[in-house]
Length: 244
Ligand code: APR
Image (cartoon, rainbow, N blue to C red; front, top):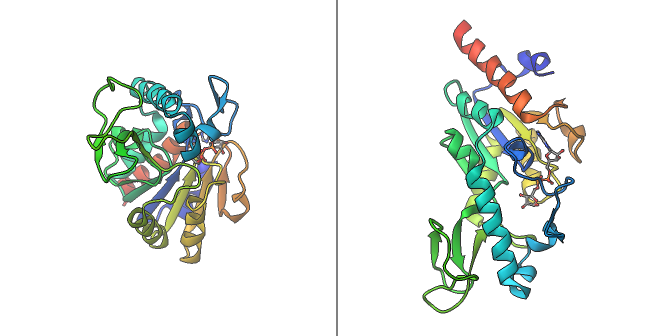
């Protein structure tokens, strides 16, 4: 359990979290590869692709609009809030694969969205970008240039923004503790971040009820939900700060 790793982590100064859909599961937001992997009987892994978007932009927009509505109704859970509390005690950066914005709503100030954001849109042709602040009158929405807008997210097969990825690699390579929470670590290049941290002598912790493809690389694994394990992790740093 988390208490068992107290000695290994309590002196950490620069802590990086790599998070995935699992950390938002207890906020009621479905993960991708669990039992929730379907929407209107469509495989979400097929909907989150540029091919699906060009084949049926209306369907893909309807899926993202539904996800956005669900996310607006959701709230940060105890796991998100615990990582936000940690900012009081150590330097915390979150490298998230999630597009739901719950880390920011929980109060974290250093969050890198590797796969984009559900509240951002961009033109499929010109360089127009914008925040989505209200429902679109037409689906798919159109850019002033006449082309259709798309969600500003990274779909399967698309590259991450070079700036964001270079920044993420640099952050992961300079931390002394990297905590992987709620991700199956099957998607590249995000699944390489723990390796960069390990190459720079960081301690690696995994918080996930299930095994992942990289569990064997971890210094410790906590087979528990994030909403249970992360408050215990925050308590270690809180008590350490009080004692010193
Ligand atoms: N607490 C912690 N982990 C959990 C919880 C929980 N309550 N519930 C589920 N998990 C774990 C699952 O065991 C699984 O390993 O969360 C992980 C979710 O994995 P995926 O569904 O594959 O989601 P993720 O790893 O974020 O996917 C990465 O792939 O689908 C694309 O772009 C999308 O960002 C996403 C990326």
